[in-house]
Length: 158
Image (tube, rainbow, N blue to C red; front, side, top):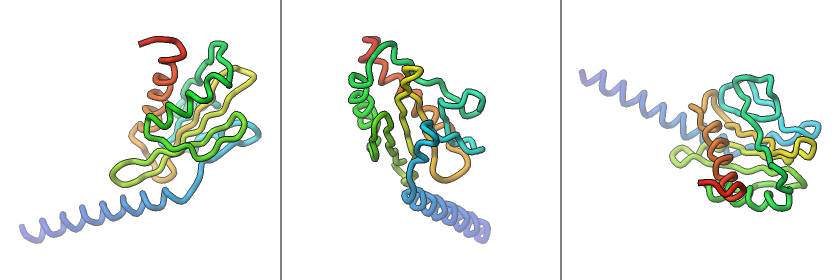
């Protein structure tokens, strides 16, 4: 019985150490950035969502339709919503913004990217984990929460 408890405690300790190491490793990296003027596609792992590629059923999330709002009006609000959600804006250039979100316990870093799409008059979004395989839906929930928060003052709802 004591041997079983010791083995279980060691396995739990190893799992925790591994999670902290993964959290540490995720801090070194950066957002995927733009690829030929578009957000990068998601890797073949369920820890990313992106609105640029409708053909990728598992990773696709709808872009934000700006309903006539100009970039000058919506851009400051985008940055404020990210900060209000606990993110940090890391890079901003023209119609592109990269931010990071850090998980509270293990310190996993996720990248959140926004691209102003002049052609479609929308916001293209991408949220992805830097390490690991699955994110248990965290990035999809983050994008949905961002879209909801962004829409509130623009549409005067809720």
